[in-house]
Amino acid sequence: MSVGTLPVSAVPADPRGAWRHRMADRGIDRTLWLLLPAVIFVVALFVYPFLYGLSLSLTPSADTPGIFGNYAKFFADSYYSSTIWLTLRLAIPATLFNTLAAVPFAYWMRGRFPGKRAVTTMLVVPITLGTVLTAEGLLNFLGNAGWLNRFLMLIHVINTPLKLTYNYWGVFLSLILSGFPFAFLLILSYTSGIDPTLERAASTLGASTWQRFMRITLPLLAPGLATTFSLAFVMAFSVFPSALMLGNPHGDEHVIAIAAYEQAYTYYNYSYASAIAMVMGAVELLVIAAVQALRRTFYIGTTGGKGA
Amino acid sequence: MSSVSVSDPAVESVIRRRTPRIVATPTQWVVWGGVIAFMIFLMGTVGSVLVNSFGRTWFDSWWPQGFTTEWYAQSWTQFDLSQVFLVTLEVTGAVLLISLLIGVPASYVLARKSFPGKGLLNLLFLMPIMVPPITYGIPLATALYRFGLAGNMSGVILANLVPSVPFVIMTMTPFVEQLDPALENAARMCGAGTGVIFRRILMPLLVPGMLAAGILVLVRTVGMFELTFLTSGNSSQTIVVALFNSMNAAGIRAQQSVDAMAVMYMLMMLIILLVALKFVNPTQLVARVKEAPQE
Image (cartoon, rainbow over all chains, first blue to last red; front, side, top):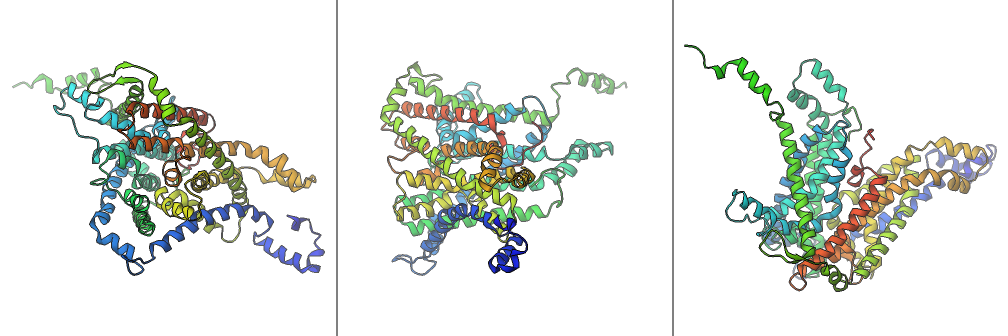
């Protein structure tokens, strides 16, 4: 900042000042020091632990020889390698459901109407309460003697209680209860960003509701859908407390987060746990990359509003 | 042969006109059905915890046999909740303060300056939000344990900073962008030094943004399970982790006292949420999305 106050004639006389001046032209001056705490923070608490974990995962041990020993062990042991499939089997259908089901809701609520804030507030409640409380509540609600089974038996839809806890469905429902509001609120902000005059124009040209949705709204929504899917997938893929509490954590709901956790905290095998965490990150990034690639096959350009 | 009257188009249109509301568009049916189903699940989930926390015994019936408030007192002493709430308060306060101190100056620079490597830095700040907590939490906890920083309060605070600081940066950068730099330049022209500009011009303008960012960090930190779970020890559990641990130690404790703790946690979150919604839009609690121009 003092650079600006230097008299111009002093610049060539003082080589340090001249150098500073040149750097300031490129945007490097003393204000950049303000970034230092944040850079130190992200390097110390994110980059370093990540690299440390990576190096741990590549460290050979007695039962895992070679650099990729931990990874080889992971893929050779079907109890562990199957966790990828068991996690995807939960996360992808739940995320797809949440994202796609949110579209008609958000499309319908895209305009202004009284009570919109009340609806969004209500939806934000399960997100705020968090997965642990949701899991506890669903255990009570969906259990054999829970209200849901009681009600369904009362109206004679079923005769024996549905088994909805300690299996796939319990975890799936918890992913929907906390994931749907998340997807909905994101998509709502994308649909309300689409210029409504576009649809009106299509309407005057004789397009039906369905045509307007398919040819105008959906292509404009594609980037928002891809982003929402990715963010919702990140949440669903790291399903942890609900899989432990509502699923069968040593059987069909032995998801990859549980596998990494039990290696680190039950067996204290940090290098194997780090390897599993790395596999988890890689699989997740692959799915997101695939979604973004798929999104590129759709309309590319401005979305008329704030878009992605 | 005369045609049957029901298939007469005129009659049909009369029938259709008589029941216009029930024949609402299929989309509306689906939407309303979905809203109601979702509400039932939400109410059922929250309600069954609430009812159970007041119930004496509740096995195979719609309602518990008799109600009592004794589970709350029992839960408070059994789970040492005064300690748990104190830890939650301290952790949240520390995370809030530190993440604002680190994040606000950084977002000021990111909003105002362009410099070599800015894109890379932005990506670096985005990563902790895009990667799920469990993925980086396990290497992070391992590294913190190595330096003796995990298993206590400092570990919990450090781990919770990882998503909070980027979150402050993501919320504050657009906020600083919309402040007019001419104000700072004018103050400088009038002879104000950097310190005065910071105190008299920037700080008052930044307060609303910091309030919003702070509230969002507060909600996320109190509710953050994974990172706290991985780095906390016995005396450094926040309320979510204490709740999870007591649920998994079921059988030893009465389920009702666990649910009483859950209700206290729920109340705490709802109060924070109500306060938060005074300052921020519900969507902002979920992700960083530019404000829709509607309210």
